[in-house]
Length: 256
Image (spheres, rainbow, N blue to C red):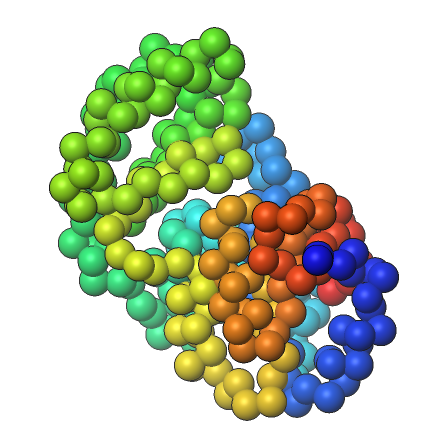
């Protein structure tokens, strides 16, 4: 059962005290920044930015941001040196000027670009729809779309993407009011965390991951497997793999 983090603070604090280093991985949207009606409105609150800056300066801490946004965009939104960054749910990673892009993601980028162009054309008449081409994935945001239009959105989306999905050329995932098209590869935020840990001095480290959405569950699962701490930002849910939860990004900031 997921435990409300403040109620379990003593347990977490005792584990942190015995660790030689603490490695913190954080999602962005809904975790560091409150969920916004459009992606460009989801800005990093100054208080949280200052907390991240201070943590990154401490010798016994490592901080990484793992987001569904593109690597370039998430780096620009955070704007801090000395952090690890992973974009597109871990398909592209950067740490200490060393980078990684999954080769299958690179191979799929031309098809994703083509699908994006088709989606722009087919969904153009629907008010509130927002499309993102993140090079290694696509996002269709429908938070502002009228409920009466949702059946049409999903039908048009299927007409564009379904053939490529059936042929194994892409895979489709869903999150909070968003449908995503990704390369056909078994890669996720958990795999990105594993890749980053292989580049850290991770012996006797306490690994923490906080996220808020379905796409963060892979990160929770991996961190749990290595006896780390997984934190869901949002209400308690029987469906999450996270061991702990807080209600809002501001509450996570207080804990950090």
